[in-house]
Image (tube, rainbow, N blue to C red; front, side):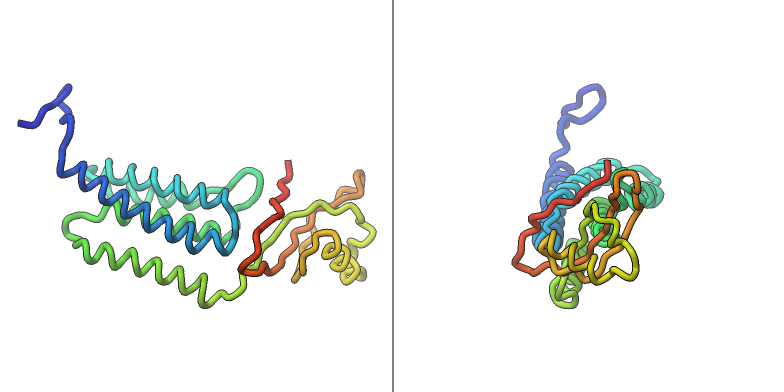
Length: 215
C-alpha cells in the first residue's frame, strides 16, 4: 500500500525512476551541447555554467508540473521568459542566445514528452539536435569569430582617416589579429572610448583575455 503524508505520496517508484532516467539523459545531452560543442569554440565558462543550470531547472519545472493541463501554454511561457533574457552589463550575443534557446528547447522536449512519444523518437530527436549543432559548429563554421570590448585612450586616432593606424595600434596592444572593430561612445573628459574588436581565434587557443564590462 502506498504510504502518504498529508495526502501526498511519500514515493511513487515508477514516476521517481522516470524522473531520474529522464534527468540523467537530459543532462548528458546538454553536457554534450555545452561542454563538447559550445565551450571548445568560445571558451566562455560563464555561459556554460548558465546553460547547464538553466537547463536543469527548466527540465525539473516542466517535469514536475507536467500534469498541469496548460502544458503548451506553460512551455511557451518558459520560452517567452528565458528567450528575452538580457544581462544588465551587456547584450547577450546572438550565438549565446541561440544556444540558450537550444538548451531550453531540449529540456522542455525531454520533460514534457508524454506516453504518445516513444523513447526511440525521443532519443532520435535529441541526437538529431546534437548532430545539427555539431555540423554547424565543427564542420560548416571552420573558424569562430570572437569579440572583446576594450577601453581605448588614444582618441586622436578615432577618426575615419586613421583607420589603419588605429587597427595597428589595437593589434599591438592586444596581441590579436583584428578583423574589424566598432567604436562606441567617446568620452572627451577622460579622452577614452569603448571599442568592440572582432578577431578569429585559433581552435587550439585558450581565451586568455576576459571581457571588459562597463560598470
